Image (cartoon, rainbow over all chains, first blue to last red; front, side, top):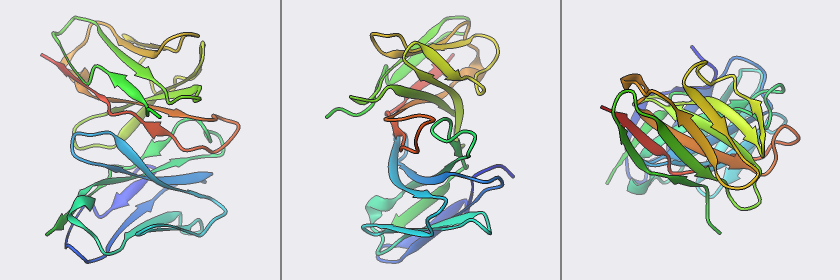
Length: 113
Length: 116
């Protein structure tokens, strides 16, 4: 598996439920970012968490980072149909910080009305 | 307050032709990144540029692909003699700072290249 691997690949929930997506990575990181991509569109930056942070919140989003397990989770609370999209985690390493991001394959979230 | 601009949004080329993709970073950003996304996959890094400099091109195919970010004007990703396997979405991102800091990368809407 590659750096930045999301789990599950696809998730289907009802409006109002919470959605949790996980990301695992292999090497040490400096930062981990989550992005959303609506079908056929560009990426929207959601949140950045640094390696020395454990949790961050932004509106209905909550991101956790466990560097000992090399994993992160993205929680979307009280989901809406408009949250339907693909969600990607992206990492940069001490060697590449500020340079290239390594993306996972994404989780396709479907929120049913 | 324009974001990252890319044009064209869609580009169709026949095999053997050249494709030129343009990217204008967000105002004040001097770091530009190009990524490629194949259908149903995540983004793969291609190249990182600052004005007039290629900083990291480790993700660029060795042949047919080149990128530049001139002192004036947009960044250009150029693909010569396109083949069907080049069909993909190409995304440009920009950031406020590169190696010196950990700043978010903001993405453009992408250029969808179709090679027929």
